[in-house]
Image (cartoon, rainbow, N blue to C red; front, side, top):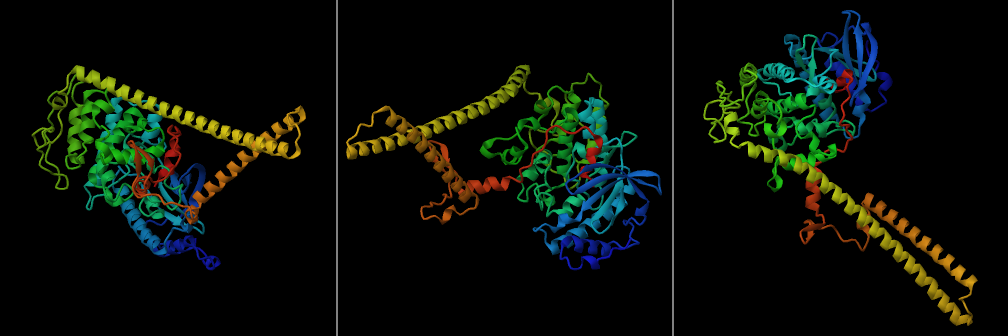
Length: 545
């Protein structure tokens, strides 16, 4: 259906311009343009995503259900959007969706991309509908057995192998259980390549509005150490290489087994993830998060522990590629249940040039596989494992007690400060009233100790106390207003914040500008993410395509 742009010509909005660009760059005969959109019948709304609505439609021409993502074009009218950048991002978007449209129909490991069309207010992206939902939906409904998790892991590796061996290779960069769809045949299809996200944002970490990147903090738990430590940062696609997908795959494998990615329970709130996780990735203060099987899956079988240790190698050069994983996983799976992993040494062909390194670290086996063997990883005896068990729970109890102690101290300081201030106001009121009584008694030579004068004095003390308290609250409100509007520095009494933090007896009493800048760069947004995933499988589609 042709769009009448004349009625919108007076509106200088990017959403209108975007529609014009779509009409020009996706002509009627373009393979990705849906020409028979009148045959689509609305069935139900599956959810509301970050960029619009996700609905289930019936394509009457094929009698198949399909997923339709309806993108609200007013999103692109945000003041931070730039016309030239948006035009370039649209070209990238169309180029990628054409590529995925071609690939998805040539391979059964990728969710099919059928095409798109637009009207006067929205544009629509139509993809395959899979009623079984995602692996995340499944693990939140029930606990997967190790056999099921291994099956889905192998299926995902096959899908990634297809992407990674293309020319040029495709880096998914967002592997997690939510983006692994289950087919009717119990196989896996990769979804959510972030096309709309990249179109709406300047690099998928920098959103044009606060609600766009609601899940960004949570997905940092799947990001590899080299990406977290890179100068580009986890919000830039250019920071991701093929090994980053393997690391995310290892984290997703943990999620299949435990319902959540590694160290999910470590964070009290998702807002803590960026600063803490980035600090550990850069090994600030010499600390880092452990990613060993003995910590992450201590009760799992030796098969599971071996695969976790293989995928979660912190050095990206030593991390296996998909070709090596396709040999390792079946070999490990076919071992007997009583196998303890002793001396395992997978005979694997060398990695591709993008991965190959000389494996000479003493922690690794001298064979060309380059993996840590379970024999070497078990250099600690049972007593050491017992201490590891004690340390694991003791550190968490200590962490909780530390938080509890801090909370109690904050409460006591607050109460003490409040009582001191109230006592000060009361003493000041009493002093003022007594001074007035003294001056009055000296001038009129009368006795003010009679009951009626004492009652009046008491009332005056209470009123004066309330007045001083009210003045204090008004002054505090004015001070907070000046702080929020950054106008406090206009005062003649203003003393600027120092560049370096001021410390007294090792305790920071004034945070410096440099420390504040470092912390603000580490933080991305402050969304509220519910740690309890919804079990409704259709909710997955809010992240597609």
